[in-house]
Amino acid sequence: MEKREKGLNLKLYAIIAFFAVAAALTLMVIFTFKSKYTAFHPDQVAANYVDTIVQTGDGYNAYKTALVSKSQKYGDYIREYYMYPIIYRETNYKPGDNTKELKGFNDKSYMSEKTENDDGSLQGKVIDQMYDYYVLLTENGWDNYGEIFTKYFEKLVSVRKEVFGDDYMTDEIMFTALESNVASYGKSLTGTEDEFDKNTKKQISYKSIGEYEKVYGEDYRFTSFIDGEKAVDLNTYKANIDKDTFAQYGVSPDDISEVKQYTVSVKTDDGKSVASADVTVAKIGSSWYVDSAATDTSTLYSFYK
Image 1 (spheres, rainbow, N blue to C red):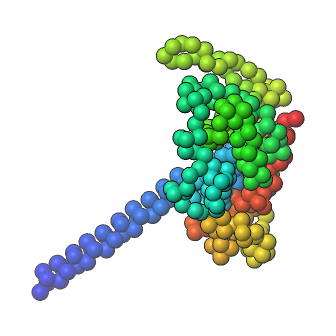
Image 2 (image 1 turned 90 degrees about the vertical axis):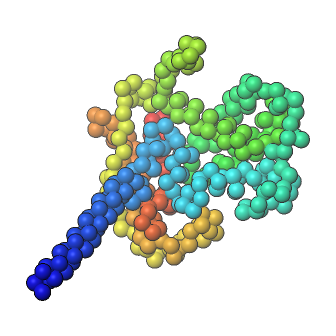
Image 3 (image 1 turned 90 degrees about the horizontal axis):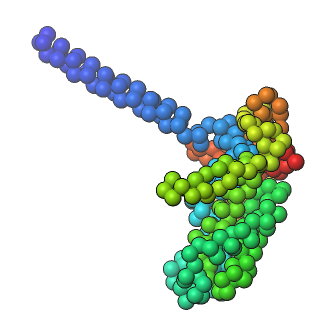
């Protein structure tokens, strides 16, 4: 009888130990997961949003942490609402439609010989011609991304037709042009160094002094940090939401359980304050996203001028 009782106690202990270890491991995994992914930390989401913009003037990629990227990939959202309406402009395309049965200007029948035989030189010419227009469109920031995408891609259609002599257009062409301009603009701020191709040893870029370097010196460095937090009333916030825009993101006001606003400031290594912005972040499930519609980042594009 006594042995039987000991056996039962050992089994019970083993079960308790198993679940205790499992629980401990689960907590460790959760902690590691949360530490690794910024989305679980509203202050980091806000700071990273500002930092992405400030470091290279890149409001385009900053949106990857915003509500616009919540339910689908950022690139897919851009395709659906801004690229496909141009590519399939002679159809009755509406955002969300299946494009497999539609004939758009991405069909090879619209290709000219210049398009078929281009070695990248003409594509580069289009990108170069689009750069000044990109700078003009984004001089006050990326807060109105809808207007930027719409006007930029419309301009791209006309510029490309002038260069190639056809109406051919794909999402790859559109992304390549836009992202090349985004990168070039960033380099105009940060400056560049001499670079050589690893294989051919041919020089592929030359040293240039960026706008940031002219103002803050070639050894400048910006640091973004939380400089304050403000309470946001959830009900008031939800009442002011543009439901149509949020519906495009696949977000309902009822999805949002908490809202915070952080003041994110930027300073140089010597402690000089150069810029700041109030960033609103919203919580959906366990993740936080920037509400770009409630965030004004215009000052982050002009602090060095």
